[in-house]
Image 1 (tube, rainbow, N blue to C red):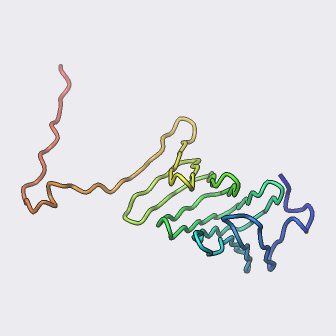
Image 2: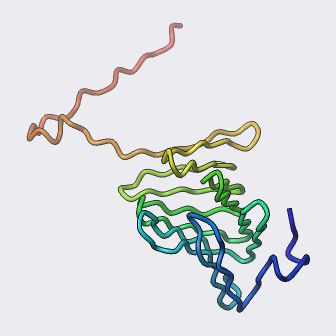
Image 3: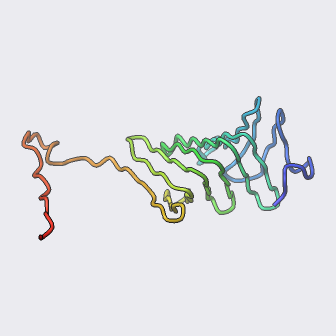
Length: 164
């Protein structure tokens, strides 16, 4: 992996733009201290925007690394994400998020974890917690009994008391 201090032909920083020859990711645009990577919109492609404090591009492996206050917007799939770091692997069509990851989908579904891998083609998230912790997911579940026009509340879950 290259660093931001290596060859300026491989990395463009603040105030410059770099057109990437990747199927999904198209243009890097930088403004002020916030750096943004946005996919070009062409037939079959949908924009995915990643904003962060620092971004690096490894042209050999076609990997973009975004660090610091990472924000991802993927309107086509109604997904927003925040993390400390994100790596977009354009060949594998995968995004690895790490550091206090929060994923939010329209409708209220959300996930919190230390590390999350988003498999773009499968539309699937794989989440891992910090050691000795757990992943948290919140899903908005429609209660079919309430939506059928019945105003009767759903039955209560029984409470089990331990035996003495």
